[in-house]
Image 1 (cartoon, rainbow, N blue to C red):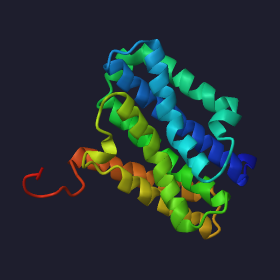
Image 2 (image 1 turned 180 degrees about the horizontal axis):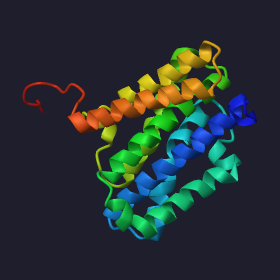
Image 3 (image 1 turned 180 degrees about the vertical axis):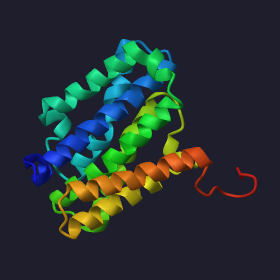
Image 4 (image 1 turned 90 degrees about the horizontal axis):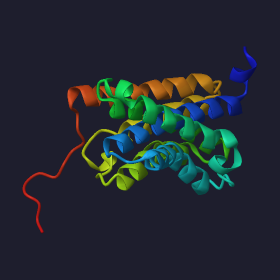
Length: 213
């Protein structure tokens, strides 16, 4: 077994950085669509990529948050923001680029968040919830800064796939499996569910009838 697979902390950092990159791309693309300048693009890239992990670390008392303690966590969203800023015409030709990058970020973050919560002593259920919070936190901050209703509140199946993916990862890790296997399985569950929901138009239940004031 290769050394990086054998060490859970390495797996967590890799998943964290990959999640930060793809989430930062999604945030930067939203900023480009809103016609923000370079600073605005980098701000949205950074808050989208780091917001969920920052919130997770504060809630589980993993301080200082990784975003402030490790230079790689600050460099990755800057690189992603610059890539999106300069190459957004190419990225924009991808089908539904923002939601696709967002789905990958959601999948990576939910399992990384759950695994880190377990590592810091949380039980299975709270760890799964922390995985969900890690996955949805950055996107919520991105949408609020961009003046949009957060995706998680728009009847889209977003938080539920994140919770399911985090749950799969937690079950596997608690069963004593090496972290990489459950993490990949959980990410695949979340990503598949989210992309199928986008493709098939699946939505969360909404209140029936006219809204009362």
